[in-house]
Image (cartoon, rainbow, N blue to C red; front, side, top):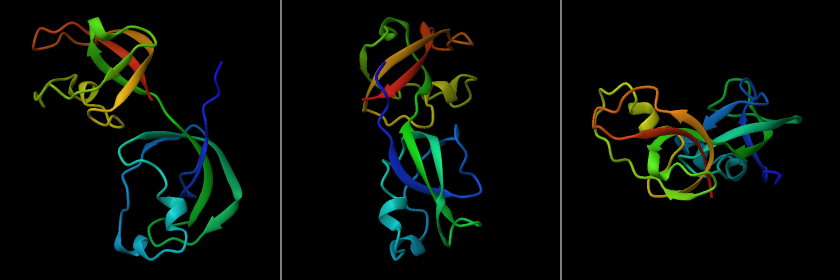
Length: 150
């Protein structure tokens, strides 16, 4: 089994727990621009989902954004649960994810446009979890999968 490559970054000490999944959103305030540890906080790709693997409790820095400072953590890129066309749901296949459904009122909308997916980027179908939880309003045959970024 291939071990996922970890990356060291900084997140809020109050939320830093192994297993935490989060989507990195980018620089959040003007104070970040002049912060001395900005490069360590903002070394992830905006829009991607990450999972905390370990917390390095010996490293803390004051932060204008996070209440109890920031701490160093090791993260991996986390898989994203999404709905894709059934004909694309093949284990270990590479796909380019496109947001094609505009129906915001659909019950499956969040699975068709999940947080942590960057439109047009390539992903690997790492796991097939089953059929869509609801029938697609557009009549498409969909599968629920776990996608890993390439």
